[in-house]
Amino acid sequence: MESFPQTPRSRLRRRPQRGHYDAATVYRVLDAAVIAHVGYVIDGQPFVTPTAFWRETDVLYWHGSAASRMLRTQAERIPVSLTVTHLDGFVLARSGFNHSLCYRSVMAFGEASPVEDPAEKRRVLDAFVERLFPGRTRDIRQSTGQELKATSVMSMRIEEAAAKIRDGGVHDDEEDYALPCWAGVIPVTMRVGRVRPDDRVIAGTPIPAGLAPYEPGAPLDDVLAETARRGY
Amino acid sequence: MESFPQTPRSRLRRRPQRGHYDAATVYRVLDAAVIAHVGYVIDGQPFVTPTAFWRETDVLYWHGSAASRMLRTQAERIPVSLTVTHLDGFVLARSGFNHSLCYRSVMAFGEASPVEDPAEKRRVLDAFVERLFPGRTRDIRQSTGQELKATSVMSMRIEEAAAKIRDGGVHDDEEDYALPCWAGVIPVTMRVGRVRPDDRVIAGTPIPAGLAPYEPGAPLDDVLAETARRGY
Image (cartoon, rainbow over all chains, first blue to last red):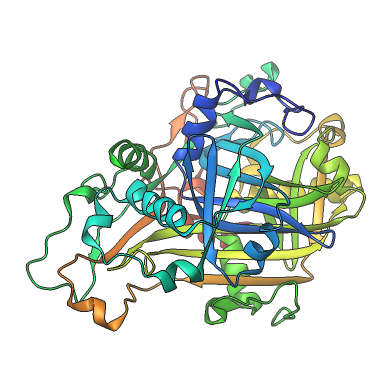
């Protein structure tokens, strides 16, 4: 898949110059995120649930309790949408109208479908842990059959997706540049903090080498790109 | 409004101990965010659009181009949901099943309704600028009638809302604490970067005093709480 199809559902009408449909751009924005917002409909009412997600080729996965209303509903193979957004900054222009945000987002469409085979469920759940924390499935206690039963995993092959990216600086109306008004960009970045070991870690147990990318102050984007490269 | 009603639509079934329905908690989570994910339905298809939003008492506002499909659809007073999520960290437990995320989220429900009166539109748009950048509407060129016409503003009185918060540390099964496995929390925080002035700012124009909360390294949560206090 080089590029996703542009359809009435996915094509950007507003500011089409900010739209990207190539898989590389779509995946880069998705892979920099941990949480997605999944949209679905129950009796005409839209619900938007934030949930951890991960990607494998053109399939997105999310999971939760087998008792979850969201997952029980989605198991009926209903149309869903999954949106990921990164806020990157504030653009302060010389008029309110030209104020803006810097952001990267992806809106992806498809049909939700449950992962039912227990072996496949175990494989994709392990892949999720490895994707975030390379090597971790070798260190932790393996999932029990009961735990797998209590966990629903949903998948969605991306039928259509569009990335929308606004970066760069201030764009003012030409005549407004003469105003004695400060303008500029205030960037914001999701950053890793200092790791807090659990009180009951057995003395002498080191922080696993696979967590090395989580350096204090590192942008989470960079960390997730690195762990995705290292993970299996 | 002390507390939002718990209904089948808004009540948390999974992990009810993480649910909060009091307005103070709901507003605190909303006010720490700039971007919300708005869910709406067109012909049975759920859409989730990320958009800047702001709050005034129990009314949420968002805006965009008058030509936007999202806003034209929502102007029909359809049911919408608006979700805000903050990722606060990764919880690494001794089993995959007990891995978790720290987060704060709000899911709010209501009916979208356009702000049509031009004076009210100007007032709420100015309030949005002031909410983020106290004092800024005095520095910038005021909106023209044409700009106001080109901008749609949507409002939603919150009918129901629930906050869901997961904080704290690792919770493992008792027998797993004996494992020689590292466990702990990796916090993540959205932080302000170094301000980048626009190249064409007239020499000698200072950074406005109202932007003082945007100190490099400051958590965006704290900045937004402070600017909301200062804004009009």
